[in-house]
Amino acid sequence: MQTITLDRYADVREAYRQHDLEQALYDAGGVVMADCLLVLHGADHRRRRRVENRLFRRGTFRYWERAFLRDVVQETLAPFAAAGRADLLELGYRTIMNLTAMVAGLDKPTGSTAETDAAVDALYRFAKKFSEGATLVHTTRDPEEVRAEVAAALEEFDALFLQPSIERREALLTQLAAGGITEDDLPRDVLTALLRNRDELGIDRDVLRRECAFYLQAGSHSTADAFTHAADDWFAWAGREPAAAEKARHDPSLLQRCVYETLRLHPASPVAQRRALAPISLRGGIEIPEGSFVVLDIAAANRDPQVFDRPEVYDPLREVPPDVPRWGHAFGGGMHACIGTELAGGVPAPEGHPVSESERVLGTVTLMLEALLAAGGRPDPDAAPQRDPHSARDHFARYPVVLGG
Image (cartoon, rainbow, N blue to C red; front, side, top):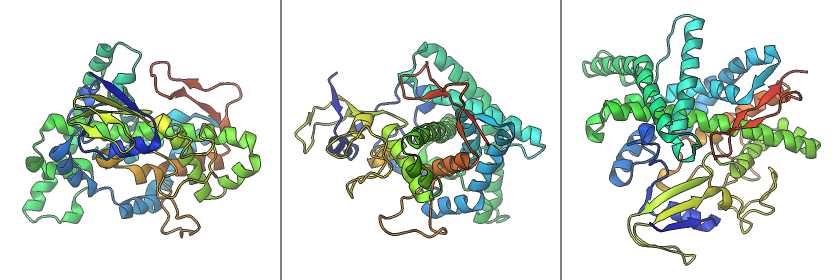
């Protein structure tokens, strides 16, 4: 099979918009990704996306950010701040875990604090294992060993979280049909939406399980990864340009730009992969034969010198063309653009037009970075960060920091 690699920003953007390029990056990770929204194509994808898109509206994100997300960030950070140290990967996962579980529709125990903490620990463990399964194409371990571990984790996840969550929602839907409750009494999450539309979508319990596992791992893994890179980039920038970094630390809009620059330089997925279902001609002159394998080199396209001046340099204050987002292609594009873009990255303020506090959506990564810096977070001088030895992706395995002082 012929493989064509696209590494220019304009070519990647055009390829994302081609309906005859089918998702192919997650073929190896089918144990957790098969039939998920991210890999569906054509009519099946449109139907699933239409159902789930209703949950991902800007007003919802703005409400979450004002109502409880800042509190979640502060409450998660508090015990680490009291201890005076943290690992950014663990802090990132634990901060975002409650939100991703809520979005997916996974209920946690409502009893003692110990039960709740144990549930978060379990979700944290599942999210990391499901992420390993989803990115199997980039593993350096034995793929069959990873698949077996992921399959076992899915069974445990199903028993501990998914089945109780399904039973509660099915009971609520029965009450709704009988007139005992109203629409406002239903949870607003992916699982509820899928259960209400399962006949139209043609999904079974296995698909429900993988879709909820996908949301749990995709939201937590990419957010924790982006948070760690954002902190690392900001620390280095503060060393080079302390005045500019200090100004950004006290200006949420500038700090959001710091996050966008990190996303440009360190996209969660450095490549996207597609299969051509028909011959395609790109405006730049590239011909893509039917049946060929197309690699969209996001990392290279986000450093295209025709689009980004000094593309290798971390510069949150850089100017970008008006039709280019500051994060480049980090959130994908076209039919498979990340459904949670505004949840993770927020909404950029229009250039030259300040946004009121009530209208601003900073996104979870900016809120997490803001809280970390306010708590005096800085690299641990006695413990260096370590890259993930089991992945070809640009991931940290651990990133120790000290807090306070």
